[in-house]
Image (cartoon, rainbow over all chains, first blue to last red):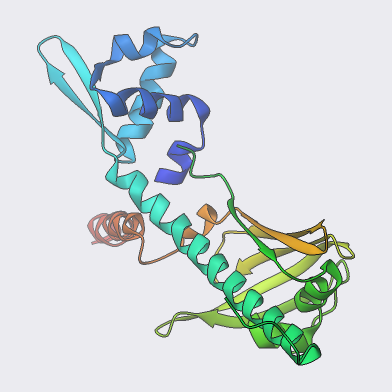
Length: 113
Length: 142
């Protein structure tokens, strides 16, 4: 069985759970109360999130608490951020190319800002 | 937070759409700002490949044109050799009073991370493969 952070966040219920416990740790029953789906279904989502390292579940007395581990999500954001930087660099290059081209065609040009 | 949202970047250029379109689709012009392709044609189904990446690592990019609307839209698939992920890049051009707004949308980049050795999860999985594949095998067969 393959579990990874991308699979974990692919499901809207799981994303909602992460958002919920990101603010404060919550016990599993309180998390489940916010959803229409069954408590076992929520437990399963929580188990998947825990297996991917996105949340940790700790026993406190009789209750089990979920806490978000957001470093994992940072890894994903960083990955996506690399692409944003890449495409912005490409747009810089395109802008420069277009500017040079218009200079070639219009030798008399107002001075640059 | 949704990390499956596409990467979207936008910029407005002081140039007419025809010029920007040419920069995006004419291989001689593309070489000057984009990538060094041996050939490019803005035709649905046209496939091209090129190597690019960081100084330390080059990736072979595999692309296939999926949509062409002259002066408006160009889409192609974007994948890497040896990586199971797949993504899609779309360039959209908007004429704004003689200027051109370019929007680049890159969908599916998160699918690449799974196969990247720099990504922590991978080494984690490699660890398990080692345990299940090598050690267990040794134990059962030994």
